[in-house]
Structure formats: structure tokens, C-alpha cells
Length: 130
Image 1 (tube, rainbow, N blue to C red):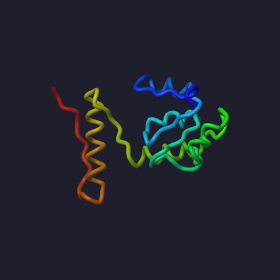
Image 2 (tube, rainbow, N blue to C red):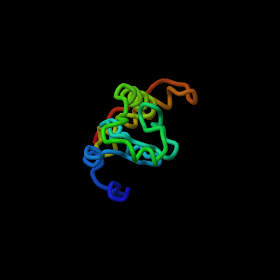
Image 3 (cartoon, one colour):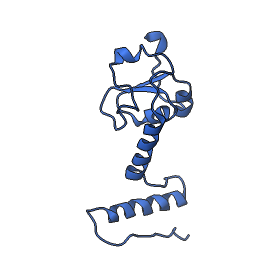
Image 4 (tube, rainbow, N blue to C red):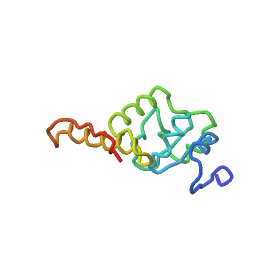
């Protein structure tokens, strides 16, 4: 196993997963790009994406025995999973630009206001004028 295993602390995740033949994770969502690229993945802990058709469901010792390209994630299941996660947990925006921050704030507030916790109208905040 040592000659096939690399522990990496940092780097370009997309580039690394493009060249991986397998991914072993505890529960990190950093495995999702690899799964989307069709890389065989095993989650050793409780992970939102650890399900048949997406990750290897056997033991770690059996995971090492699979041939490269075998036990790839099912593209249709992965696609459906990603759509559900984006819809249920993601908010458009970022913290790097003014427009991104306004989008994130609008999305977050609207999600909160539409939840069962709050009752009231949706908000549409305009970008601050400087």
C-alpha cells in the first residue's frame, strides 16, 4: 500500500483528483470533485456522500484490491446528489467581491425568511452605493 498511497497536505485539489486512481477520506467534502470526475472513493467516516452508487461500500482492505477504473461512481446518481446538495445547502455568492457579498447576503436572508423559523417577505438588498 505504501507505494500506492500519498498523504497530501494542500495543493490544487482539482489537479490532484484528475490524476488520482482512488480517494480515501474520512468524511471530507473535498472528495466530491474526485467523485464527479469518476474517481473510485471510499469514505471511512459518516459522510453526506457515502452511499451506494457514489462511494465504494466495502472494507478498506477490499478498496485497495480494485482495479483502476473499476467501481467508478454512477454518473446519474452523482449528478442527482450534486443537484440536491446545491439546492438544499448552497447559497450563491462569495466573500471576494462586492457583488458576491450582496448575492450571498440576499440568498442567506431569503433562505432564512422562507424557512419555518421566520415569517415575512423576501428581501432584495441593493448593492451599497459608495
